[in-house]
Image (cartoon, rainbow, N blue to C red):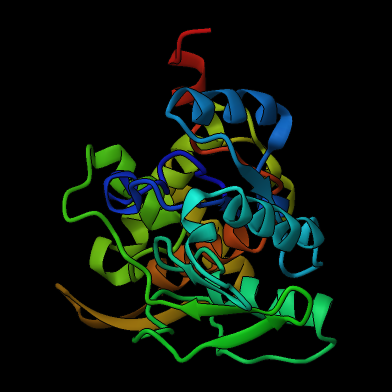
Length: 272
């Protein structure tokens, strides 16, 4: 996930309590991980000792998850209260970070079986806690897929925009063009100009209207509208800015604009 710190729900820490837990940072292929060690140090400063970066599409680092979870559970004093023959793990997190994809990836790795839970590129695909899904034979392990959970209050507008860029809420609730504007601002601020090459722009640009107009024309996302003038109605071709913004966001979320770290400012402002 391009926003590994913004995506943390602060209420999870209180809810989890002493329960053993592992933080899985998925979609590592979309994030610029030059600061991976800083991310780990930042999370350790918040009391998180067990972190794994994964890419469920290519099963990257997925093999580390089961051994890590098994060790965490077995080292917990709660594990030894009785005879345990199976492990039941709950997968929780904000929407659209790949919880269902993680379960399916674990099944591919350990059981050589296909999908057990539906996935999608937008939030809200999983709508209820599902029945137990087996992901491993030895040790016998079941996972519960859960709907994404956002904190009831986001700490800042910028954090909310980062989460929206990652698809944790539906785009229209924020506005595609608003998100595209913030994305362009972020890319330019960090000198990430992959969008220039991807869309064939003449150079970097900080005017979202100009960028979206170019994208719309390039993709043929235009529409004829009638404009009333002093001489009568005139047909004018206008760019479809919403469609262009949608493609801009899709390209970012697919990694077509290059890896991006939305939380770089947070890491830079953190004490060493």
